[in-house]
Image (cartoon, rainbow, N blue to C red; front, side, top):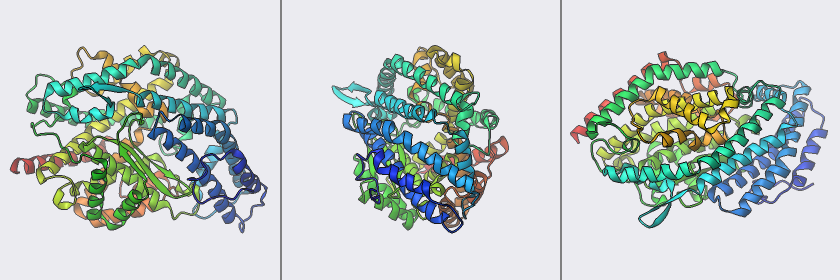
Length: 570
């Protein structure tokens, strides 16, 4: 039997033959109260390596979408390792469930396993691999999009600084170039979309479920809320948050002295200040964030510095790099990895604070003995990241470790808080779009119908932005959302988590050290508690109605007003 290494770093070419004997041996064991701990530890070890291999191969293709060998390795994994590993995992889940044993600290993982075992269908294993490949195909299409700017070929994320230009003509030019380039791929992404939906329809049918939404709900292990709760959340945001966004956009229009706000007017400083330029090179972003974390908490700072020293950060934007940002984990090594597309703007600082929260979660759960205990619902995983954005924000000031003068730090914090209001609204119409897609699947096969639905939902929530003459660009927005193509229905979690993060922040304003200690302790629980219990651990209710949203929005708007006053005095 092939010996198992401690990490997946050196097994990028491993085939199923390397893993299969270990799964077979686990399947042959007899289970009892005396042997279940060793069984779970050994199962975790092999499963960690399979998971880490998948993530390392996935990372390799996102850091360079033009790397043919990386793509081939990833596809080979999906074709040759992923299907039999899913079947082997299913067999071990059934073995443990059939044993009637209840290992200590394993009630939530057992609940999850039971649901996964009930959902599993052998016929879906290759289709789930196809779904992964289709996500990689979307990545490749979008990652290859470039424009020419003053004679230089640039990937679209490198245009981010120009969207903040005080010169309206400059930001309009950048916006139109990027939006026009995206629209060029409309038909190509549209054809991919139809294949995505056909595959997902078959997956749901194989599982005996009425639609893919029902399948995805079970696959995402959503035990504590249903589709109707999401839709109630949409309504609460429309009632409470959309008016706050309207007030924010109205102030922006007035300060910019514009008759109407256009899409390229949404990121420029409304008071006419020069754009925030916190760094030039990614190395400066790294060192600046490290200083901020040292000012916030030495333990968290040590974790971040460990990532930096180990090469677990890939931050700078470049051609053929997949869009967006993420933090993943290498399960066997118990290490996080952060990927993003930094271009020298404040949003990059915000993104690295966010992804570092995920990384801290990985480090905090490393002490849990079984892999299944380290699997955390996205709803709480995003609490880790969104809380960190707010907890670290007071250290944006250079005197407190960060990048900015006091006035610049106030601007950055105002931008973040206003962005939180906008994010709640954006997340709602993205989520609402997905509910429409999977309850109107035949209609959603038509790209024109999707365009119309997206535009209608956007305008249901936002009326202050003038898209006259840009109807095609507005309608194309759904094609640009990674979650819609790669991880469907995984978007409402950010909205839920942001509401909990605001509770953490409100507590920290009264007692930072106590709130930070509560936050770190909650992260150590991993997936050993239910979502309501995890939210309670950070002092947040697991409710998403107007009664919780209202005070949160009030606190955010009050903080914005206070920062505006500080800015006026600076």
